Amino acid sequence: MQEQKNAGWAKEEWQENPLLKRIMNTEEIFWLNPKYKSRYSNPIVQPIKVKEAEGRLKRFAPYIAKDFPETKPMKGIIESPLIEISSMKHELEESYNLAIPGKLMLKCDSHLPISGSIKARGGIYEVLKKAEEIAMKDRGFKETDHYELLASDDYKELFTNYSIAVGSTGNLGLSIGIISARLGFKVTVHMSADAKQWKKDKLTSLGVIVKEYEEDYSKAVEEGRKQASHDPRCHFIDDENSVDLLFGYATAASRLQEQLKARSILVDEDHPLFVYLPCGVGGGPGGITYGLKLAFQENVHCFFAEPTHSPCMTLGLATGLHDKVSVQDFGVDNKTEADGLAVGRPSKLVSEMMTSMLSGSYTIEDGRLFELLRKLAKTENYYLEPSALAGVYGPVQMFQSEEGERYIREEGLTGKLNQATHIVWATGGSMVPKEMMDTYLSEM
Ligand SMILES: *Cc1c(COP(=O)(O)O)cnc(C)c1O
Image (cartoon, rainbow, N blue to C red; front, side, top):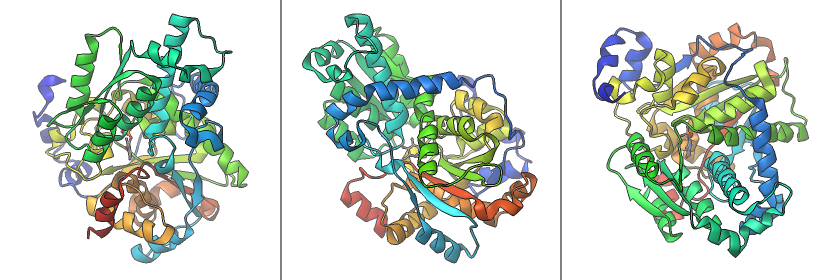
């Protein structure tokens, strides 16, 4: 992999491909995955692991409720609201001059407790799993014991003998840092250049060691992995390869299924569900897609959203080269204000898994992220960080592009669109400091 970096080899090979040409010019695209199988059978799929993750999060709920009192009303279950955004739907229809048939909803992971982003799912899950493992190994802790015990000084002291490390563009570091520091672990977060200062400051104030790099996300992960490998008591959370992260994210699907049921919103052959997920390295959206496919099979249609300057997953999938190519290989600079999505090379694990599960992906310009941020604030009073707006553009792409039209036709969805539900996954934002949000709202 090393020798391919900055080689530009891929660029030459794909020079004449019309889609790749547009990606290299950082134009917005909507890509349909030709390998998508509505009924997939995938050897990587292990439904039992998702069930296990669900069970573990339930066991930990009393601990979460104790150490994070804001989760008490939900009895220690970390979950976000699902809301209908019909005013935003009108706004999109007006400004893009199109019709979005069906319901438009927002899944507010931006407002997940503890760390205010989608990373409160996978990231926190993996740290809890590690803590449980240590407690069992060193203290004979059992699944049937009281998990509030893990909040005691005794256990905090035990965890200080261990450390956690992670590489991040910001939000994963924030999630891992907050939960690990509260449990008692020593934590080191390796931050890429894109990481926002307020995220680093917040972590430093919690006693987390923050290491900064001038390079992008891939470098931060690589360095973190290398440094952690020298220390047997250090667990490295590997955003590029971790299946535990993925299973943690995947638990979102059964929770969503319950939320839809509670509102009598059907998902079946006649009621398709479209889900639009912002994608960085792929763990979050990949894990959720995986869970959604287990829950809804061919009746859910998942699309990833990436910035025009960081289309790493689209490139990995469209070329079939997965993590063997980076956006830089195609002359794309990986510079975006959407810090959570500023990733130049996709996760191998996720890219391979999505080969037959993902319906497609699209890109969005940074300027449009801010435009949508202001529109959502104005119409729905919801304040998100720029990365989280990438999903909102999905229904627009779906109903204004030829590719969208083709997808609907080929999947036999034409007569079912009025009964469709579109869910835009809002991946972060509730912890953005007010001054920062004010500049987002005033940027034109
Ligand atoms: C991390 C993140 C994503 C994407 O998740 P990946 O696992 O990196 O693909 C999307 N939005 C926000 C706000 C994020 O922090």
